[in-house]
Image 1: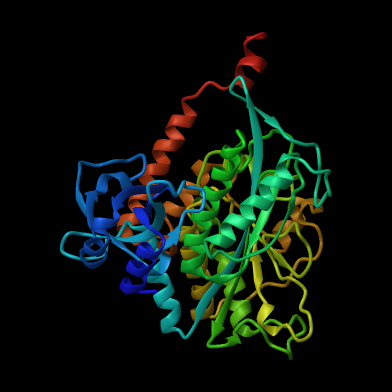
Image 2: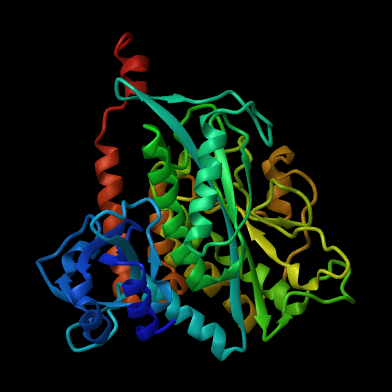
Length: 441
């Protein structure tokens, strides 16, 4: 799609408002609207705005930025009323007034890492599985909608209709959906997007999160991608399937290997495992993320890989004859509240480094890591992911790989944002502390 296509579609669909979308450092979707009269000029020259809105918590003085709409992302917003003119959206690339890409634009960070993969001969494909919860709000407190479990077929209820309407809305916006189902925890659901290249998928993931929430709000309900909203239940993950292609050929597949994995795939796995602790701040960026990454709730804690074992950080789905293009690895620690542009960027960077530097892939661990003793894990060289936001900050702050993948400026601002979050959290007095200590101390 190009400028002329966008102008034609806007006219044919009687579009009055165009929302220009971009993402801040923390993964929040930002937006401002222009009218159709400004569309052509915006496509030619971009639209100026106050760039301090992209800084997250660590905002600086106002600074001029320009949002350049990407014509390939033009879509109508199906949930917006048509009276008085339809509403469309486009994702934007953020540049400085002189046209230089803004180093802290998450979309630019991902593009830069995709260019590195391209120079190595690869196209990066991803397929994330974003889990989320539906809640009914009662006096400000969340109530679950059901007590169902994994893949349960429930009678017709609100959640079934919500998932159906969400899938239809996503498909109206050109986002392919593979399937949807109930997840393990009560009121927890998942809609899996059909794999595509990483930039399109990051845009799709941002759209997906908004669509899920919009459809829920229409029914007076609330949807959340908070990693661990319910104590004692599984949290929400974003298991990310990923592969590298050389043209039409899946670079991860090797028919002669016992695991059907090429040397490229094994190097990629080795890179992810070696740098897993360093990139966790990006894939799991919130204080609440580390309430999910604990033993006993199907979330990975230990850095290992396997063909079938779902307790490992990396799983390789079983190869089906004739499905060479489907060979992929599944990285299981990310959660759906991450910034997908940055998460895809650091996972790719870690994998590519493993390929470039010829990291040796360790032996797969088919034994349940949770059932091993610490001595057994140490003997097999199985490390652990950071167990708190503070630990993740320390790992990422000292990581050359993360700094290179994000760029020095983005790296510094992300660390600054996360330190602010940690200090704010550390100073809180929680309900658990009150109920545990107040009666006895």
